[in-house]
Image (tube, rainbow over all chains, first blue to last red; front, side, top):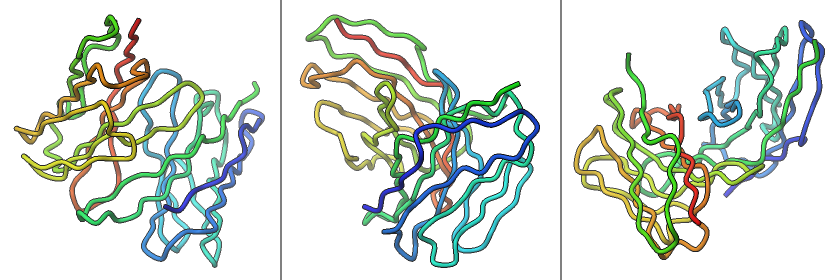
Length: 113
Length: 112
């Protein structure tokens, strides 16, 4: 299964943009790229996902490299509530026809007031 | 409100006992999943089910069992065969043909 590599931790100042990188050099053509975030002792929360093109939603933007071997989650203005562990996840199609997530260890984002 | 519920939030058991974790969803999702999370680690897939009465092993299924008798429910049993059962357990669901998963709040199981 394809894996993702993320920095263990990052820091950002409040109200500044944050760029969280993810490497997935063994990604296959049908793997979507997902981003979730997790607060302590809570379940992960969906942030954004994409396949080839850059994506925007109310929470964040996802920039995907042309060769798809890396991607970047962009939080346009970090707030204290954005402090969490961010997971970059690939979702390969299984033989049974559903999708499974491959989680890495994620990036712990610290936001400084 | 639609969502996923897991109960209880905290669960304590003695070693050698089986324990069942509850997961219920009212999102009308076809697929459901169980994950395990150890401290400082990402989530690992235990079992998943795409439809009622059907489920598949994930990456770490040994020592666990599941059932899917109803679309809304996907209970996980941690058996005495699971060597290191203490962990944070997360249930998730998704609409069958999409890939976005919705997670429950989790159950923290401690076995002593």
